[in-house]
Amino acid sequence: MASTPGILTHWPWEPLGNFKYVLVAPFAVHSLYLFAVGAEDWNLTYLLTFPFMLWRMIHNQLWISYSRYRTAKGNNLIVDRSIDFEQVDRERNWDDQILLMGILFYAVHWGVDVVAKIPFWRADGLLLTFLIHIGPVEFLYYWFHRALHHHYLYSRYHSHHHSSIVTEPITSVIHPFGEHIVYFILFAIPMVITALITRTGSIVSVSIYVTYIDLMNNMGHCNFEVIPKWAFTVFPPLKYLMYTPSFHSLHHTQFRTNYSLFMPFYDYIYGTMDKSTDTLYETSLKKPEDVPEAVHLTHLTTPESVYQLRLGFAGLASKPLTSKWYLWLMWPVTLWSMISAWIYGRTFIIERNTFKKIKAQSWVVPRYRIHYRLQWQREAINKLIEEAILEAEEKGIKVMSLGLLNQGEHFNRNGEIYLERHPKLKMKVIDGSSLAVAVVLNSIPVGTSQVLFRGCLSKVAYSVVSALCHKGIQVTSIKKAEYEKLKKSLTTQDSSNLALSEKGYNQKVWLVGEDLTEIEQSKASKGTIMIPFSQFPPKKTRKDCFYLNTPSLVAPKSFGNLHACENWLPRRVISAWRVAGIVHALEGWNVHECGDRVFDVDKIWEASLQHGFRPSGLIPA
Image 1 (cartoon, one colour):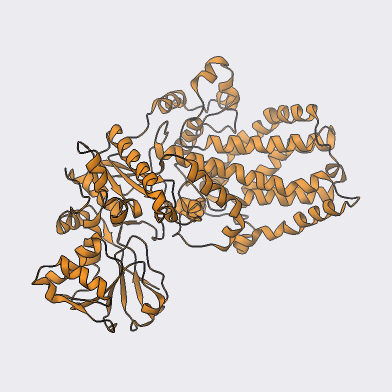
Image 2 (cartoon, rainbow, N blue to C red; image 1 turned 30 degrees about the vertical axis):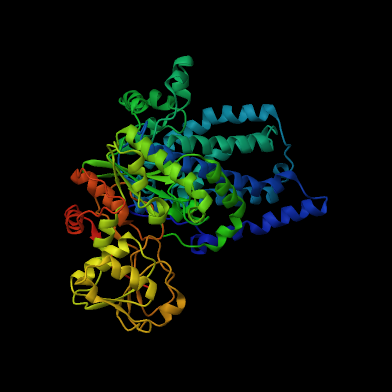
């Protein structure tokens, strides 16, 4: 929102939320109907309007995903600052301008007969369109843009756009409604002239021109340099005809320079070219890929989780992973992504963070949770993890933390097999179990004397039960097999605090795994606190109980570039396994934590708190 919002700030369909596309649905259905029945009044312009809207959305999304992948790597980065959840929320409505143009296209089609009957292709119309853009459109935009930086208009309108210092491709279209009306009038000039005056317009010329606008808008707002230097060397006048991301980035950091739309020659003519433009361009081109100190290795979970990745839909990624009904409509894309993940043979970067003196990244193994459950996939996935470890070792990364099922006890013995295969590994491999244990232990309310244990046994489960029994807290197991295994892992003295009660569900604190059943939850008393110790959360079925997050911590405000939720966790909450790797890197601890090794639980807990991480608290069902 602008600092002092003016009239026509809000989009008229804002109250409709995600249902705003009902505004064009009747026209899209009607055009398809006319085509299907072979009606005499059907025409290609009317039929292709909605598919063209879809193409624009796909085009923009491709730029968003590509840009986030590149900025995660860090090479050719222009502004090394953070994007936050506030910016993601502000830029969530980037498709409003596509909807606006679609509505106006439909209106013009029904109101102007000439437009409805324009031909599919005319070369002279396409040439004229770009000549008009180079002249009147670029000139008028330059002066309108300068006017927007006058205090009156800037505070009421354009400051909304400039709230994003670090730009993403879609930042280009984040403007108040009134501002977009003016932009549409400007960009409509070539289309109106060619369609109504010279009668040389065509469907192709309009499509190419609008796609050109989207392309240049997205490219210019990337936070990395993408135009190679040789392009300007081969054709020197290009520097006056095409801007670069670094050119426009300076406009967002300096504000009163580099006003041009896509062609910088008006900035040269009127003396508003930033003097550091060429220097920033060359500096950005030379910036190498980041080498972080810590890497967190995770993997995909559900088929729909691909949309929740930072590289996917920004709006979904900024919220905890949940099932959305409209994602079922995208099953072809979901299926394609699963096949691509199956074929793709290596991990990829999804996130880049900065915190204190270190840089951190998150890498994803391109496999889903179901793959980890398949015995015949185990060797292939372990190979992918091993290759990621060796790649990190080669790059000089100091710590790699294994997230989710990448460190399962039955899968790779909590990462122990990688150390056995590579005993001279300099990089430290962390399974994060010690901090997960610490989070669970410190989530138990003070004064608790007994807890109920229910869940699959794991390294974290054994450690938590052992610590509780050692403190004199009674742990009750409701399954005999679990009880017997736990008892064998305890000393004689500690085992006296372990009890078996197959009918006992009266405890107010439950330690639970993801396999906690609905029937078991139904036996809990009102107000019971469910504390997960597993990587995946149990299904929440009780509204009168409290469910904590899986072991996790709230990141400090100084934890940079955190604008996507980690799986099902709330905003700015990250898993204990991921935090463990970051803390190990910050502290410089020269030790592995894999297999049967458990790091000092109290030591890593205190270190985490000292670095600003905090418990995430109780979450109602």
